[in-house]
Length: 599
Ligand code: GDP
Ligand code: MG
Image 1: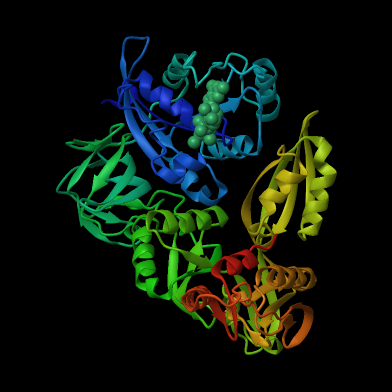
Image 2 (image 1 turned 135 degrees about the horizontal axis):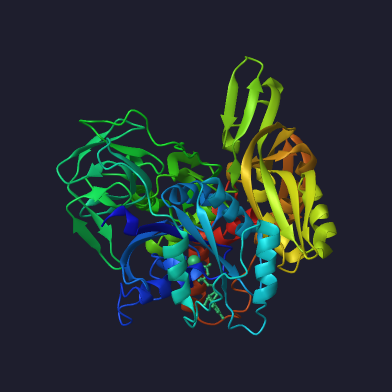
């Protein structure tokens, strides 16, 4: 297809504004898939994604659109992940496009991710074409929302298509806008190959399928390609485009086109998102701009509930990693939990997704420890340590200074909730930056917050204090000096290593008290009294007690049948076996999980 008739674009929106629904309608209108084959929301592939209504991995699809001008156009629709944890992947997907369709819900108007995604698109020089969605809703106010888009974002919106992605009304107008507003790609087919990797998935038969946007040159089967960040080389087995339900091989992919490459690549680690693919025999002088290595931000321990399942857990993590280059793990062990893995994630959502997939797709019962961020410590020896695990926290006497990671948060809210939000941010050790009044109904608050304070439950707390109206997103903004302490939890005077955590000194006491109370409420009474203590470097700062109780299972068996008594005793023994032995104290795994939940 000549470049004039190609349109590479993505759809951007705040979550739930209808991005996936619009993508489905576009797929239908371009007759890429028949109604019968159409599964709801084809672009959201995994079951989990569908249930949570989010898009975890970027996907792309090539469609043919017969436009009103009588010409056929090749549409490459690139789906972007919708969550801050995957911001880097979003930015690479945008870099593969010339334009973006901005979907705004006519009943909600502009929200945090509407702005964040639009700014990101504009930063990548994309042509942004707005669409007002959900006009079928009684609460829809398309005129007001169009005005809001013009006032706040500053792009013309009065004649933007007003559509219902749900009923399909006027979606045709969106496709015409794509043809008219979004520029055709540029690029030199005869230059050395440069293709941007914006996603990759592992397939057990073909190896890694690499999704690329060809910027310059041409790629075809038999060619030796080189990954410019690592120098790794592979021979192209196949290239082609992504149909709505299957891969469609082509003789070549040329500058301007979007498609896939397979080259017997064994792991997605070799195909880093943002990397440039070039021709090994005629390499490009410079890679495409914008590549960076993504580092995990949040760490937690993952243990099998049943110690015998350790090899299964390792296999499962290895399988997940084939497809998820940003998941890291290494073996660790805990006195309390046995053998497990220290895992690194891009953020909280990423962590929850991995945990859920382990439980659902691999049928594993797991116990996870409190998530931790990565701290930096300067030691008296002159060394700098990075600590992502409370277990490796050094002797405080040797620490000269400490830093923790901060994020810059943009919180988007109606003005009525400013007070509540400021209170919350203050409580989370936030540093106020400024407030931007966007219009009478919208305010954008800017804060710097410690990542550690967001990691637990910031999003839920924000939603509950603003009746769901506020939304937020964040980006890392570097390390700041911090006063840190390591807290140990002792049961019956023994330290339970899996419960240790690192906290800011000002937060240590309330957190310690809450964990002690949680433990008291969740540990079943034992035959002896169990003191629960929280301590910093041997100094106890909080204490609770679980009273002693002998649970006499035979109490209700007056005289009677000896076999019945035996059965009851057997049952009691079994119950005990399931308990997790924490030193001399046993607690059920459910209680352990409950304890780790801070609120
Ligand atoms: P995404 O998070 O932006 O991908 O949003 P989805 O496409 O998953 O849509 C979120 C919810 O809004 C779903 O329940 C959709 O059925 C609903 N929705 C999407 N478009 C429309 C629309 O035009 N009208 C109505 N009434 N609901 C819509
Ligand atoms: Mg979606």
